[in-house]
Image (cartoon, rainbow, N blue to C red; front, side, top):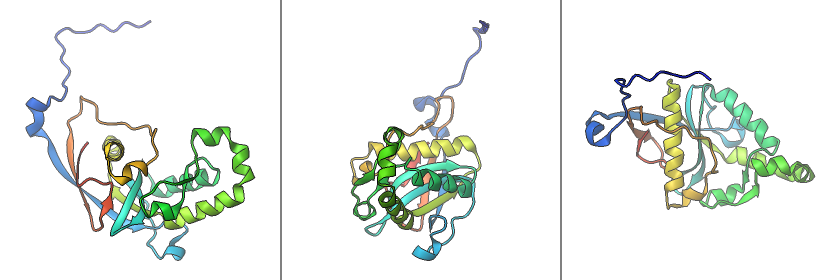
Length: 211
């Protein structure tokens, strides 16, 4: 066992709201979109998803805008959505009824994640039907992206967005899958006030988030 000698005089900085609140800086987050799920541009007449490093939102059309069901981070949206496509087609992800989603209702056709790992025979038994539902899912998705070069900032923004959904009492609380591995701000990191800017209304995306 390696023993680390601690210096009693060493102090580690941590954020104290009473002391440090005035030091919090505000930044704007500009969301571009809506973009198509890759390979469905001709079907839904939307623009191609740009290949960026940053944060992305998965939404469905809803009322006068879009309803948010998931956020994610990536160094390449092109590579990440190729991974998502493969995972959906293997039954690893939850498949929602798209018409219900557009009404702000969570109605599962197939439950992914841990359930999928132990029920592969069930997926294979209904594979044709479920893959048809996946195609509808892809066609209905509307994607938004924001470029963020810093990895930790991406992780903190993703965490703040998802926790905001989980803690909401609005309809979009039920739209998001739970159990994500979120990496929220450490107390040794200065908070950032993120002001979300988008040309469209996205239900579930707060105008201001502290990350």
